[in-house]
Image 1 (tube, rainbow, N blue to C red):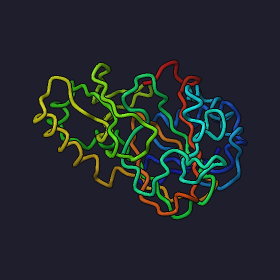
Image 2: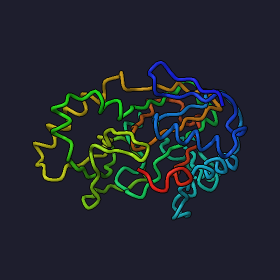
Image 3: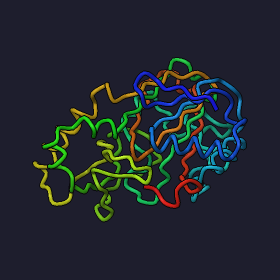
Image 4: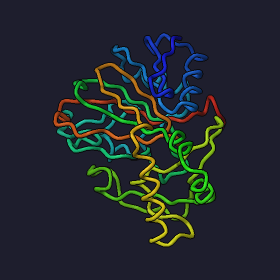
Length: 277
C-alpha cells in the first residue's frame, strides 16, 4: 500500500485500486482515516456498487434503508445512495440533487447511533465539481488556550432545518435537545478536536441564545480559516473517505448536477473499534 500525504500534512492519498487491498490493509486504511480525517484514492477506476458495499462492510456496518418505499429513488444498491440530480427510470432524482451548494455539514449530526464514515465514489461526470473538508482536530489545535478552557465542558444539541445547508426534500426539520454531544471530543483513535458542524448546531446546554451566538461566531472564525481545509476537485472513478467526528464537508455549487453522479455509503468502524468515538 503506497501512501502520500497532501501538502496540508493530514490528507492521505492511497495510490492504486482499492479492490487490490486485503482485509488487513483495508482496516489500516480505516485506522488512517480515524487519525487523519480524510483518505483519498486519487486513481480513477470503475467499481460497481456491489463491490463498493463489499469493501465498506469489511470496515464496518453500513447504513441501509429502513423505509425502502420512501427512499427507493435514492438507493442504487443496498447501502449505496446516489447523490445526483439525474433522474432514474421512474423520473426521480437522487439525494442532494440541487445545483446550489451543499453547505458545511456532517452525516446525521444529531443521531448518536449514526455511522461516522462517509464513503464517496465519483461515478459519472464529476469533473469540474469540488468537495471540501475541514479538519476539526486541526481547528481545535489552533485555538488559544483561554478559549479552549472556556469551551472544554460545553455540550451541544443538533438538528436540521431546511435551507441551512441543503434544500433537499428528503430530510425532516427537527431539533434534538435530548442527545447532547461534547463540543470538545476525544475519539477512540486518541484524536481531540471539535465536534461542531455549525449549521446543524441549534444550541448549547446551559447557555442562553446570546451566549450561544457569541461562542458560535468565534468558533466559526477559526473553523472557516482555509488553512484547516482540504479541497478535492473530482475526477470520475475517485474515492474519498471522511471521518464524520473530526471533519465537516461541503459540496460547492455545480450547475451540472443532472449529469454528475456520486455514490455515497455511510458506515461504522465496527471491525476496527468496538465503538467510536
